[in-house]
Amino acid sequence: TQLLEQSPQFLSIQEGENLTVYCNSSSVFSSLQWYRQEPGEGPVLLVTVVTGGEVKKLKRLTFQFGDARKDSSLHITAAQPGDTGLYLCAGAGAGGFKTIFGAGTRLFVKA
Amino acid sequence: DAGITQSPRHKVTETGTPVTLRCHQTENHRYMYWYRQDPGHGLRLIHYSYGVKDTDKGEVSDGYSVSRSKTEDFLLTLESATSSQTSVYFCATGGQGSNQPQHFGDGTRLSIL
Image (tube, each protein chain N blue to C red):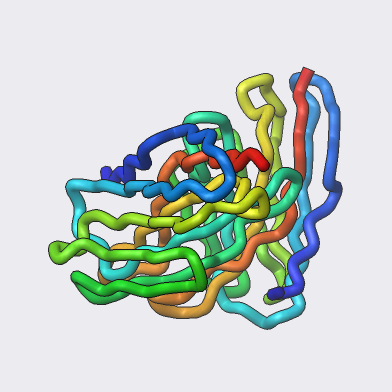
């Protein structure tokens, strides 16, 4: 069974601080996605990474896919209260269309 | 926004009653999914569909059934609801291929007393 472990599970920081969220697995994924979810809503896609070692930037968010395509990280620079939410990583296996989700990291950024 | 509507958005019912949740999409996506989201577990796949009348089980399918009679509609049924099925249920759609993102509805909060 494929598993994706996210850490930390919960993070409370002050506005302006930097943070990194990790997503790890013993399985290889053909692609990995990061979603952000707000209360009462469904997850919304932030980014998809598909190549080992790939780095993608989305404004203050930097996403990296591990060289072996088993892990990923999300780094937020100068966090803002608007970044508050649940961050989910999700991995898709080769040749398949089913996605495995991590349990999520709940981020709270205090003003 | 893939135009996904889930109904109802909230439901409270009693143990042993049948419950049907509806998902409607307007983007003509081939793949549709039902997940449940529980604290500490993230999103877990219940059932999915890869076309009209083509469905398959996910990792937590026991106690659930699905039907897809039209491309745009995917129904999730709890034949006899149990308290362990209290959860938030999300429908999602996706394109073909493992690199395609999933688009989610806003969820149905189901409480079984």
